[in-house]
Length: 163
Image 1 (cartoon, one colour):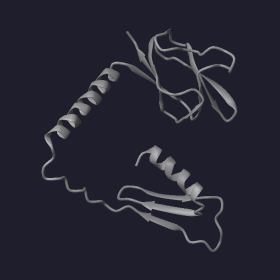
Image 2 (cartoon, helix red, strand yellow):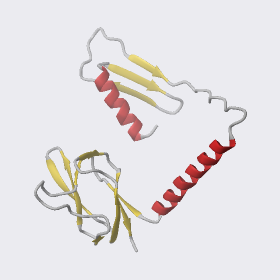
Image 3 (tube, rainbow, N blue to C red):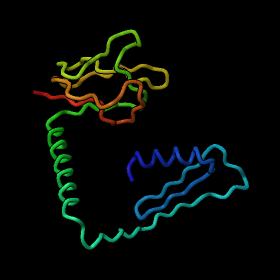
Image 4 (cartoon, rainbow, N blue to C red):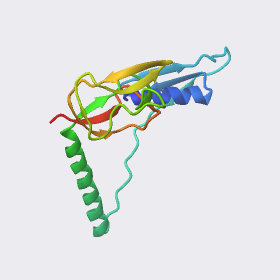
């Protein structure tokens, strides 16, 4: 279980109104308690059970297999292409902004050259606006987040070509 799954579980428990949830798997035990714990409430127990994989059909049409293989090849090509770029990730949780204020121009555009220390965006966290500076020099290849979108810790924000 990774941190994103744990965060989504916490959000789910908070929205559900349950006062306590315990999750036990083979390698991890988690107990989540909300502030609304009453004296006569029972905790909710969640146990994960191994699930059987659905059986594959005996014969699949050949054209479908060809299309799936072509789609996988495209995904692999895209992944290989993205691997040559440096990913700039969010150092904090907050709201991503491409501009310093609504009436100002964006910090960076796709195709723009950047240097170490250039401000790429602003992330608002707890009413504080944090400038996110580049740690690499290169060219912006792709902006992975929309303006005014919430971002998570370590979420990819930009792809930079270092050459």
